[in-house]
Image (tube, rainbow, N blue to C red):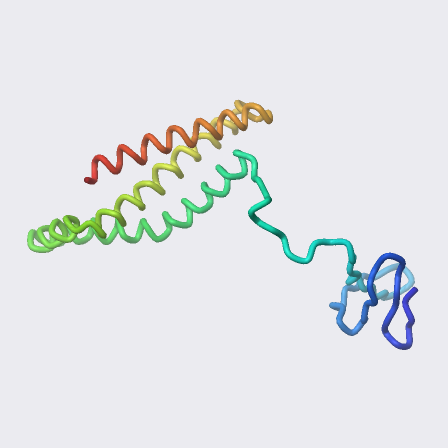
Length: 164
């Protein structure tokens, strides 16, 4: 039970809560304004999560990779637009870009950008297929996720062969 005067309280199975540490979480009821503190601490919860023990399903991995590839494309599109601008500006800048793209680091950046584009496109097609009602079940989602990984891997390898 919470003590109104000291600002502390104890509930069964929880640790002591200091109301001054609570964020002022309040709501308005018919009788007026009431403030509640939801900062109770469960003493049985883990202190540190061991992330190596968490195993994500294939659908979650594909979804996380889709988001990561979208973020990578945000930066990669800037690189591709710069290359397009440099290639069209003048014959001299085209030759300078061609020399730059002969360097392994430039080729790696281009390959990573194309890999993000390929993965994002394949995963996007999966979402479009799911939007028409195909592969919405658990089993269908898992098969679709495996197909995304397969086709994206093929596209990424082909992009690497094309660049190098």
